[in-house]
Image (cartoon, rainbow, N blue to C red; front, side, top):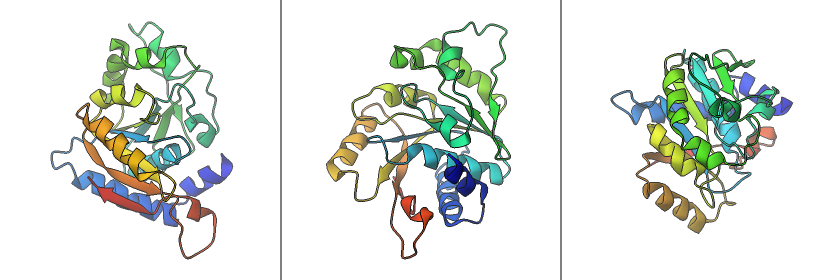
Amino acid sequence: MVEELELLSNPKSRVAEAVKTIRTNLEFSSVDGENTKIMLTSTAPEEGKSFITACLAQSYAASGKKVLIIDCDLRRGRQYEIFGVSNSKGLSNILISDLEGARIETIKTKLKGVYLLPGGTIPPNPSELLESKKMKDIIEMLEQDYDILLFDCPPVIGLSDSLIVTKYVNTTVIVAAYKITPTEMLKKTVKTLEGVNAKIAGVIFNKVPSVSNGYYNRYYDNYYSG
């Protein structure tokens, strides 16, 4: 969406500064430098997870990294909307194709250093595709070309998709909406992720109001280390 992309393009915005703090915390949370595959998920839809993922990608790219966003929400992913690109081909299409000798094509976004692999055509079996050996093979192939892989995953409650993706990543970050996400639901999300041994770096509280008015107020302004 145009407004979101404009925010992402402004490295001096309040949002950019806030997300820079997240990026720094993630970097310091891994002394061995293994936070190269980061999954972002949430408790429920509409908590701003995809926007935060895109912001984090922009922040890593601003620090000199080559970043790829992988939209793993094969049911209702929206990274393609944020960046204004086609969703006709993406991760789901690759997962049902022959990988032998193939080169995975990604989209170079308008943000310098940020690339995107959209979710693609909505499949009838998202969980099965994400759990397939091809998914592991695709990630191994992409790791050769990018410094950071960001996995934008579906909400945890009610779906197994994000739980499957945890086995491919180094770190998991939960996005919650300030005073909107019920505390009990957030606790359930954390417990569910811990049940599959996910390494939870922390929770981002999104949509925190500020003293000033403006579009930024709808988005992030806090982070807690796990």
